[in-house]
Length: 202
Image (spheres, helix red, strand yellow):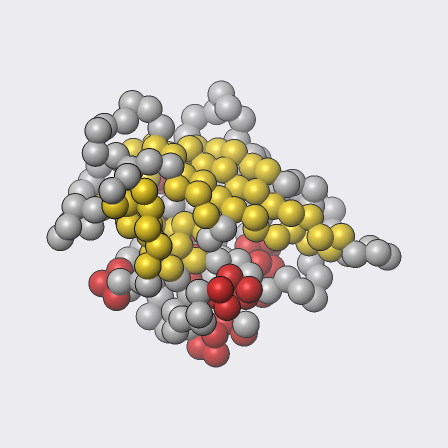
């Protein structure tokens, strides 16, 4: 990361932790695109195409920050008939997989900012879940059976180079694991935690 950190009093500590991990390579980034390998519980490895949108929040006299406006996931070609359609939401995905009991595709997502937690009704754990049903993603509360599951999707592009160029290969499973091992990244982005004391300071 170059230049001063983009931090202000309205940005949650969760966001600051990701900034320290190199989430944004520069304060001016408003849109990022990249692709990554995702290893499913079955052992299958797929490639997904990702985007992240941010809104700058600059304050008169200096300082400011970036707020998450939304992220997308789309399985890259070649696709199979039973693959889900694109996912697009203001939350931050950390798991994409199939439910071995129902065979439904699901996404577990968290958030960067406390207002998203309020929007969810202040759940005990900082997550929401999506299920792909009847051709669309349906949002629901977190299924307890996912507690303890490790993340297989990056919360955003955490590569040292910043946004990945179109011609660059997808981030490998191994490289992603190295990124997620960074101690500056909060635990709830690395796995589905079973405790979130004091609402994560929200």
